[in-house]
Image (cartoon, rainbow, N blue to C red; front, side):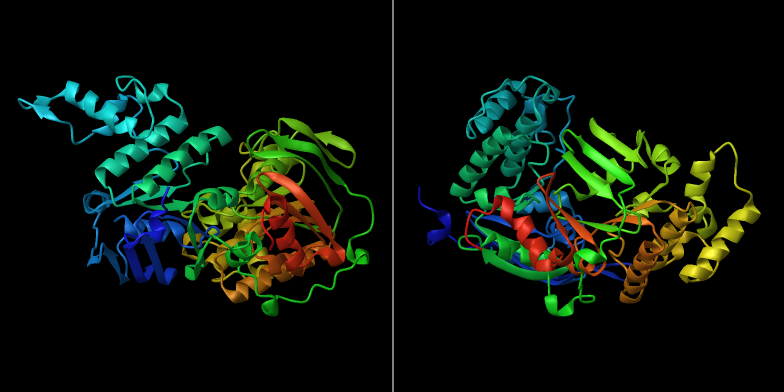
Length: 513
């Protein structure tokens, strides 16, 4: 079959230039360029916070850009909403299929645009068109059946068929394979290859690199709201792509990591996880943590980093293995159980999962202590105030006002308050998921110093970070994940950005790096 990209028709269908967008003074996109050709599958990649979703929402009319231009078939466009984008020719299908399960397949395909006869919906014609539309993709199903009777994969195909029929120039797919098994992924990819052959431009957002190499032609990588680059995948080594995504610049390492085996804290591990895992989340792993040790966790987005943290803290319940503290088996059935066993957890999404915005700084700091004590025994206001004042002073939380609603603090100061919450419980294990994401340089350095101080005082820490230099600066050991599996462990002098990247790339590498 002729590749549409190598034909004279392989022209640019969608072009975005110098796209900028800020939210409340925070830059989400900084003069980003993006282009899509007819008959091309173009992967859009980047870690959390890279700007992928913001760019897509601007292209599809959900957000209005602050500056820059968008051209569709050479004409400048500014879709004001998703409906306008669809009329222009840009359709979107999200991970959670936006269809109605209580309607039939035919009703979903033609929702809002039903064929009419004598002023009424012509159901016979709608069924005929639905069968004809789905047949283009090799799908022969009962279009009168409720959507809820079909698998997630079939629903994805139905959603894509509707989006292409509505739009027809550009198709945006946001994590379309997240809930599919390998066979279902291949069915979906066969459909995408057909759409590509028909000349459709497809933007694919995914965190599965194997799938990127299996189906995409070109890749654009964003990082921290900026364009890293666009490359043809043919001849692009996996190692180089990972380097683009993680943004390593070894000349700007936080500090030289001169670790050796002697730097790893002495003594036996007090906390053990043996054959610990959960189906569909993280494959069983072994992890032993010594007092005063920092264990780093590295891997690309979707590798199982946060899922590992959820298991360690009891947010997700393991269905295999055991956890022990000081040789005593414990049951991490909930976060309350984890807190009772001396564990603390600072989540990646601090604004949605970490703080209660309308509560004061003092109330937020006291939350974990209150949970451990039990909600039936409220902590006195005077004690909350004293606790907050102590940590505001020791962590330099600004402004130094315990009664101020925490939502009015900067990101770095919110992060310090969340750390204070757990330090107030004097935990033996503190789990930090992306502790420095989205904060300024000064607060970043302060939090890294705090981690080193807690480690020196004998606290065990698990630090999850997409910043490799951050891990090399603070971790005694680094666990590397890929495809929801713990695949490698580096310790001492092995903990370097190069070694971490090679470990991430190695399991799935199919070409020379």
